[in-house]
Image 1 (cartoon, rainbow, N blue to C red):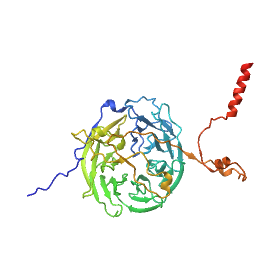
Image 2: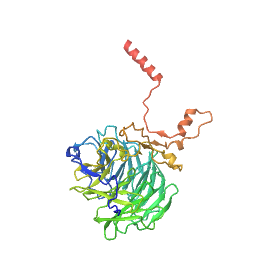
Image 3: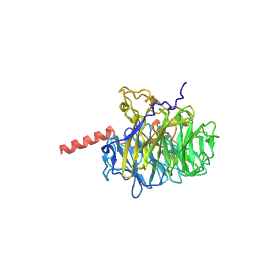
Length: 471
């Protein structure tokens, strides 16, 4: 008689987490004490950014990944905000560009020097002003495009930001608010997430509802009024197949994970009860492996699940447990992982005074490249420019292979083009005016200073020098 298989087969069933040694941690960091349910940390293959305590405004640290050990109290910070920083996120297409949202109602975009900061950075590349309340959520996707929801939203490149029940989509390259989505959320927005092609966003709101929005048509295409009955904050993220995963609370304060089909939001595909706790669950999703990691603020553990096409769809894998609770968490993209050690995820756990990397590894005996663990992943090159997206185009990420590890290439230059406000006030030139004057008055100007001199100036200086020498 055939025995029914009890244990589900999965290559991720034996994934284990391990904290790095003390000398590989970032010590003596005053992590922000702001009561806000964001991750407080963002990482990419070059830098780790951490929101820290600051007097007289808001600030965050940006450290090169290799700068481990004790961080001096005088280490320079990014410190241009006049209020506490609430959320940060790196541009996925330029590892030196980061955006921040603050209680001062602004979003600021910063360019970090190639080797990190040597002096405090207080001048952002661009300031995005359009919110009437604090900007608590930021998520970046396509180059130079930002979305922001105004109660508690995230910043994207396409950039999302917000804190007044409104979502604003910004073109970061020009500093303009291109799309404003208001009257869709009656209360605070907890988070916003783009789908893989950048055509839709999903949001979670304090009214306990989740919404799927077409931002360019400014319409809600799917909605669930009470995704979770509990009053604590929810999170909603798109999965690679278009389904939506949410984390929230039941009426009895039990933490839940639910999976939804966007085409039928009446009932969830799956609901998993976890435990009873007040810590908000922050989901981190890996679209290459279909593994989602749940990190609760105030917890001392990371739970991870595999998402499949077969019921019950959400399969518990394992738990990484430690002694210290986490204040926040950063999640490294696949480009920053060590494929030679079968590393499939890496977290940056924030303690009260420390940032501790945690490595998730699949045990393998072979030293060859593991194709099944590392399918082609999203690379740094954007599928679309911001202008293409606003014209209605969509594009899945451009994939790269990690077979030989990720070799960083030079980031393309990040420019902010600002329109000259004097252009509209300049009187019309006559028809025989020079072509140069016409072009100068009709095109936007890049903020720069020209120190060039003509050959006439050089000749005059040389003649003057020769005359003085002869005397």
